Image 1 (cartoon, each protein chain N blue to C red):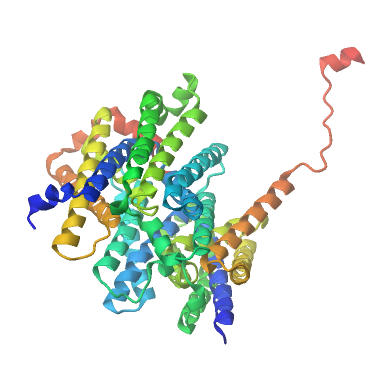
Image 2 (cartoon, chains in turn brown, yellow; image 1 turned 135 degrees about the vertical axis):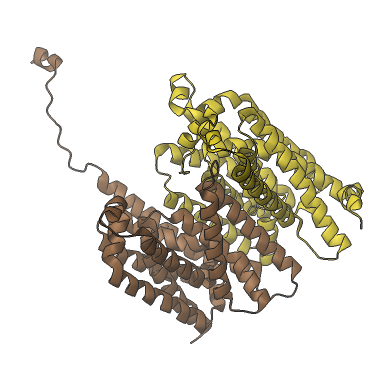
Length: 280
Length: 307
């Protein structure tokens, strides 16, 4: 398998997995959270490379720690979720850059962590992404009913005697795992595009929960293929072109849903005013 | 190298003096604008602006070299301010939509940079800034951009506060919410422009968010929020530059200046947050919370859980 075919395969696997998990993220309105997660992976990846442990593992650990810090700050009076996310994510970037400067000769490069370099993915990266995607599908197949219930009717879910945190934790864990396995393809900054855009596009054109879970991975995989192809044809960076392809699908879906909402066969409603009656 | 040397002696070198001047002005203006961002809960939109400025920087750099940075960023930022204000007003701006818009603009920027020769180096400079290599000719434009932002906010300050605390009352009193939002987002955009070409697009957000958040922790008096934020920002910027200089020259560790400044900002925030929590635990009977001034109560309503 040449490097290009491998990149294509990686983009399909990662795109489909990110689309699937992204559907849960978007439906549960955790986009901002997921974004903080993606940003948190950067210092973790740098630190893991410095310590000589596996980079995906370090990234996952750091992102979970940062999310914990974030939810603690968010609960302080007069602070709030947005303040917490902003502070955590800029702090994360600064910490990553500082670590990189303090420890010279690291085998990682800032730009490949931040915007991805899909042409240099290894077989292990692809296997990791595939495993995460399969785990996500299995988890949704097993707990799908509970996830759907807690997503669309949180108070009903609680009232029915379920606890919320297991579902929240499951989705959070799947998101973190997916973000980490998407890092090689699109990097820490652009991963959110591959998570949010396919799912948001699917939600605009597909009316059902199950349909969105099916359509989002397809759109994600298609974005991956188109992005890698465009990257080769136009000689531009691969990560951003994947992100732009996903955005293109979202814009397309937005257009379709707007067109569909137009009153194509509007019948004039007969309203007789006093003026009409006088003229008649 | 002694502490005094790091804090004062370092800034006798011309490039450090330039960096200090620009950072002080920038941090204070960002602090003041940041208080309004905090009161209005506009953090995510500010994040969108910082990302949206990136393609402007990249195109400016590709067209006009370093001199093209400021004009390119200014055009992109003002356009983004208009678009984001409109999106917010039209009610389209869900989290997912903003995330998609900002990664899309960011991708455009990276693609423009990736067409150039020195991809990795240029990208890193744009993302993490070049505080210490601000050319002398750029100091005046940067200060000017900050001044415009400050004047815009100062002129509409009373109306902005009214809108932050009582949006419906402000509209009923005849203030146009659309133009107030546009002025505030425009001011944020100008700060982002000035900061993006100095400490980098990824780190700008810290300058806007941290001082406001610290001010909210330290005082409950509305008008004290602004000096508190500006003071914190100025001191943190100064300390950050000094630490970076001491680390690089004294200890021989090559600390990037922009990241060091942001690290000092975040460290200061953590310090104030811990102090506040400890003080709340120790000194306050529960009655203090109930008898908190109305500022807090109405803020909880307007700022709420963010977006």
